[in-house]
Figure 1 (cartoon, rainbow, N blue to C red):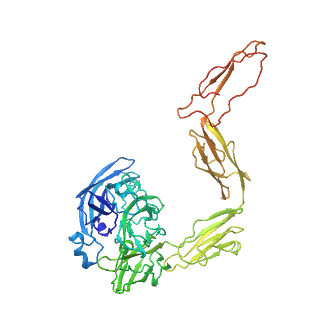
Figure 2: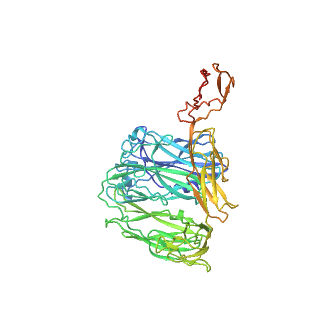
Figure 3: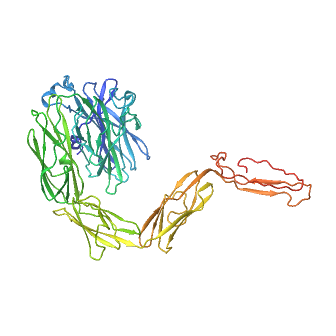
Length: 623
């Protein structure tokens, strides 16, 4: 299975120098679970063939709260992946010629990792290429790759795999549409983010103004966090590092792991024109699924669809070909093509029962220009739903409203179950007409709404949500003080009205509180700082309200405990007495002199005949 995964790994290009003349032109780290705590890790590097050869082995460093390890990965496969038309491949620098050539080197090794909630596998090597345009002094920083995983909660998960073709060379002032073509062998949910280029230890590298890791090529670059689609029109020749991180999630939204790809786009002046980036929209759609946009489809388990997509190139003599990761993301699908320019691709698929989720797939179109080809990548978002869903019931009171969102379909019709408050323009608002997937309900009495979608086929296309309208209440939130010294406490208090049994309370955070689920917790702190609280009050009928006004400032000093004694409580005129102040608490080592005004001291104005006053010496914290 491992070799099958590697065969799907597509190209990426970042750039750093190795041993002065060796050019590593790309990289990522992926892994495959072998069972019983064993994993096969693959370090995938892309070598610029104009440089010297790579080594035959490298070291991956593994760090975690559970301990550290290292793994030697040895070269497994090497093959050429140059961005050249087929006729010109024999003349690449990989084959002794002068055209730009690129090789993929895969280094593999097996390691046993004990269960831990956070492992990081990393690799670095000196140094990045001085020719990089968007990083400050790039030659002074190492190239760096990493991937992370949680094998305590997910004991045999696999990393995502990058499947899309590389486009290291893009044309000046021509639109570029690029997707990483990621798929997850386990069907995990994925999200995407642009992150900073890093050096050894995962330390971010500063960017040359006006570039940032979010706009690493130009202002106006767009990136889709749901599909990983990157779009830009480069306006300056140069080499631009782009780093993308893909995060895996389980069904509850918990992070399983992350994998990054550090790549470089090389912007060059071109006479060739790339394929049209505005082409490829879904056409001639059929089946039981629903087309929800130019590049998006929704369907239910066991539903099906077919569509055509047509691609063109401004250069009439170019012959278009395509590649796709559809077989990995949509198992059992079919894809075929007719024509050359225009190129028409036909896609068909039947969703598998019991396999709902978001499954984007890519089609990459290449123009075959010689010597360097141009590409465009198109992402088709396929969302497989279990049914139309409108979310949980809601409870409102007083001026509150219910915000309801329906999923599973394009168009939604809302009605009520008899006995509720009839829908009017005053108590029901469609926020996104004419689709009405998002609405606001403000009924005067408890009302059950039925939402019906345009989903067809086997999907349940209706759902019900009830908005409970219950008695309103008010509350008063108070605190006994707003400024404390270390060691002091304050009383927080919430009093609802009407104050009936059955209210529940939740304080967020609970730090410093005697309890987080009562109306009147005591707050006390061992560290100075500002502490703000949100309290959520739920009435016996289920109405929920919040207060965010309570907070305390804790000053960096203690109020001293002291004992005042007098030697003689009575004495004659002309005699004296002694007052003694004993400090009962000893100052903690982190508490400095008190300039914060915890106490102003004791001031006493008195006159005892012609008497004298006598003070005892003391040390900090004195009154």
